Length: 212
Image (cartoon, rainbow, N blue to C red; front, side, top):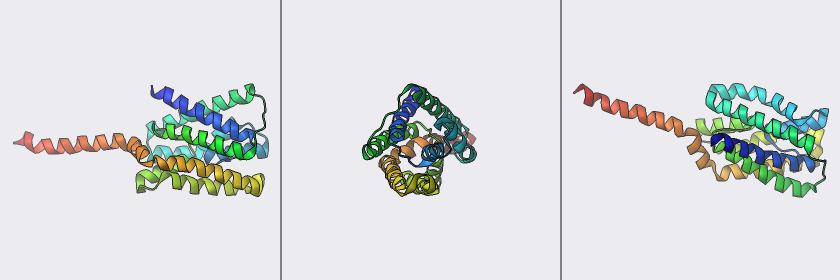
């Protein structure tokens, strides 16, 4: 069941990425960075997407655990395969930029949210935002937007100021969707830790009784 939800989340994101790509608009995070690099060096998106995510896996393993990291790797692999198939099968289409920004970003945001709610992500700044939420209870949507904005700035040379504005709007839309469900995300991400803590507290409570 969880695998199906992961696949559905990746499928939804893939649709959004295709729309953004067709409108020649990037977005934030590893997806946006990979899209911008693919425009710049003419390398297909799935390859640049996998390369961009490598540094964030280290943070994920150390701070969010092996299970979350493996789930994220699986989601990235699924999205990469879906993106590759889409590029091979779907014809090139042209979508008006503002329509692509709004529709594509909303779809990407919904897909990212579904992955978060299933203790997974698409790597990149998503990992950073979830770590900061767990550590400091920061709004993952806001931290996602700030970090995404920084990444978009680093690609300013390749996308230009107009592209920067479009990409920033796209990142903002995704971050708003995440912020709306931040409490639900926190509950899902920390549910196992809460259970372990309650179990330990129950064990400590029962120990004096057993000694008596």
